[in-house]
Length: 400
Image 1: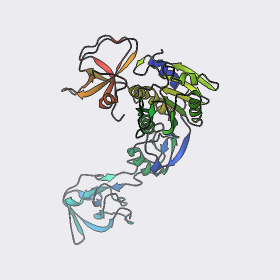
Image 2: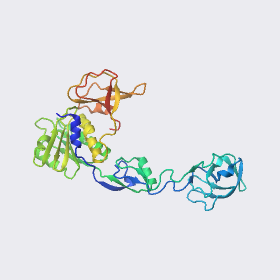
Image 3: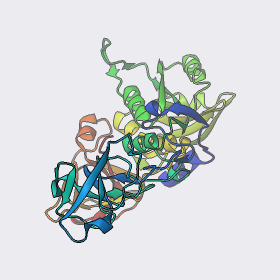
Image 4: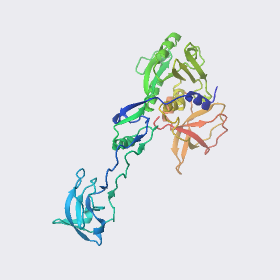
């Protein structure tokens, strides 16, 4: 068995971001930006009014109240063509260009108008309620840096910068193959000794959530020739993920399949719980990540290994950021030589800190426990007994 950190490093070794492609801004949500995005214009393009009111010269407002002569108006999109001179005012609306000569906007509720005369009762001072040109950004400025997953806010900014097309990383094509004579699809007849497959669908959902394109290869029976045919169908994909068949039983054929000509087994077995019989290799030019068959083992390994791999293929750091910490709500016994990923509830203590409560049952077949968990408690190999209150590393499961 190799340590988790070594397995991750070997899986990620040599992984390069996929090439970029151009997509319309309307199709870019959740995609990873492949190149910096610069503004194609200045926003706002000129000094504009931040409120409805009157465009005036600040020098004309001393003392107050001051009475000015109305000479026109400036709606948004239709700038006033003249110049504001001494003792003059222009009716202005939010977003409208500030007329030449004016340097201030006074609020409409602070003014009275009658017969073309505007009486200003209050003013915020010179430059008040004016948004200067370039307040948001200027033409040529980098508004969005490469290697970020595009959010709704990012797309709003790109649109405001007048950028209709974006260079994004191609979505990884991930072939997903379940294995085993006993596995049937949800909704199919469940014969004696059979189980309903959850792994393939769950992995496809994870791949899609992380920006990839899942490609289902179905279910391969426990037959070497049939398995080889299914593996060959992954040609052209960026990654092949299998579930099941990675253990030591006579019907666990994935290791044997990766000993055939044109294949390679890099490693098998990782010192972790759940997920020990994980393997990594290659079928032709396609990297293979072989996950265990137990559903909790599959998903924990997908979180620890597959998700970082998908991020790396899209030019993102393997992890979101520094590890999160929580305090134990209950004590934990000493750990053995495998790194543990304990399913646990997650709650807030009275002081606002996070409390992790490990579930009493940790069987790797129990999807109900994983679905109920708020986090995984990460326990390093040979970790000593940990009393309640001990700070531990956690992996939040929000959204997973």
